[in-house]
Image 1 (spheres, rainbow, N blue to C red):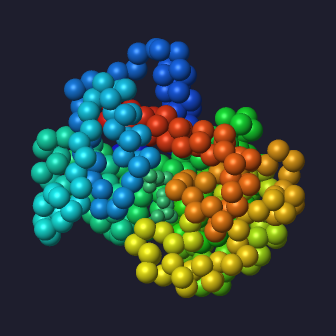
Image 2: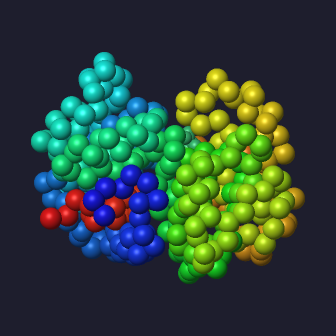
Length: 303
Ligand code: CP
Ligand code: NVA
C-alpha cells in the first residue's frame, strides 16, 4: 500500500492490517505506551471543504506519532488561486512526508498521488471517504468482535459514505444492503465492484424496511453533502421516508448498532431519539477516526 486513495484499491488483508494496527494504536494511547514512530515527519493537510473531525484527528494523530501536521486551506493557499495540483504535489513532496487531501473530484486526488513521491491520503472526495469507513469498520469489529457474516444496512443518499461502506463492508465479508430513492444510487463503479463479490451479499433496495431487516449495523449520512447545499430542498423531498427512526430500528437484529459519520442533521436522516440511544457508538466511531488514521499514517509513512 503506497497511498490511501479509495478502498477499492485495498485488499481484505490490507484492511485487516490497518484495523489491527488501529487497535494497537488505541491500546498504546489508552495505556500511555509511547508510539512516536513518525518522529520528525510532517503531514500536509489540504482542505478544499470544511472539516472538524478529519482535521483534528489527523493533526492530533501526527502529534501523538511524534510528527507534525500543517493545515493548508484551499482558499488561502495558492491552490485557491489556481496553482495546478501537479505543481502543488511536486512542491509538497519536497517539504513533507505525506499529504492528506479533502476535495471534490476523486481524479484530483488520483492525479496528486500519481505525481507525488510521498504517500497521499484521501480525507474525503465526492466519490468516497475511506478514512471514515476504516473507523466505522474498526468500531463495528470492536463491538461485535467480528465483521464477517454481519449485515450492514445503509439508508439514504448513495454518496461518498455509501460508496465506501459498500466496498469496505463487502471486502470485510459483511452483507451490505442499501436503500436509496431512485436517482440517488451509489456510484456505478461501486455497483460493478459489488457484482464481483462472491463471499458476501449485496442488495440495492428502494425502501428502508427492506434494507434494515435483521441488520447488525445501520448507517446513514446527510441527504445533502458538502457542495450540494443548493439542492437541499429538492433532496429533503426526495429523501422523505428515509429517516432512521425507532419504528425502523424494531426490524433490525437485537443489539443492532447505529453509525453516523457526523455531522448529523437530526430530524432528517435520523431522529434525535435514535441518535441519542446510540450516541456512545456514534462518538466511539468519531474517536476511532484518530486511531484508524494513526494506523494509516504509520503504515504509509514509517521508514
Ligand atoms: N466525518 C467527517 O469526516 O467529519 P468532518 O467533516 O468534520 O471532518
Ligand atoms: N457525505 C458527507 C460526509 C461528511 C463527512 C459530505 O460529503 O458532506
